[in-house]
Image (cartoon, rainbow, N blue to C red; front, side, top):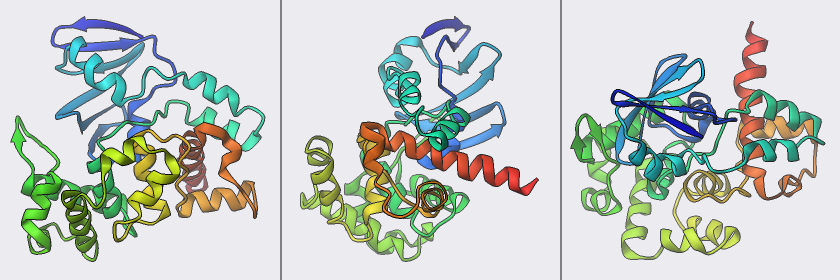
Length: 279
């Protein structure tokens, strides 16, 4: 990685296998606004950050190298060798094609609590509506600073109760959001434990929350806690498995980076092949 200061902005170059726009659009996060095909604003690490594609890299607006290094290097998972991970998938033709197509995807390291509530909201939902509900939740109960609304804490959502969630129009998910807040505040579920206990135990800990099954829990573990072996299975991934791998498929064949394989396969099926079929 190489950083170059340009006025108040930061240019990142010499960083392979990194496309933050594609990474935002592959279903792992919901707090971003696409400006056009070459720029977007995402909301993470306590601030709004606009990123623009350049011929030789990525321009991050109004941020210092110090702040980027302290917060966003980890958030974007920039110190991981994705080239090596892609190479390790080379013997699987289907996965290799998907990884080549989505090679700019990196797994964001999002806040665990925010990721938990975001994927509870995602259940049986579409991305525009998910984003709208999350935005409403943050505007209603988050703290505002320079146009950025923070994600509300478990204590705040516990305080407002189910009735207080009515304005965000989350439907049946409101009781799951409230249950998550109750169990976090009471200590019945510990996100600190989830972060350190190992994948199998973390999966069971999250499933103590109403509305959190294997799919949601695996999303939270992969995108919020860095459990790269987590392999969320939704309708798109089911389609991929049936198409390329058949019955009896075991995601552990992808090894410790099964979750990254999942993102390549998901993106390839949903954003590449599906769009090609429409043309």
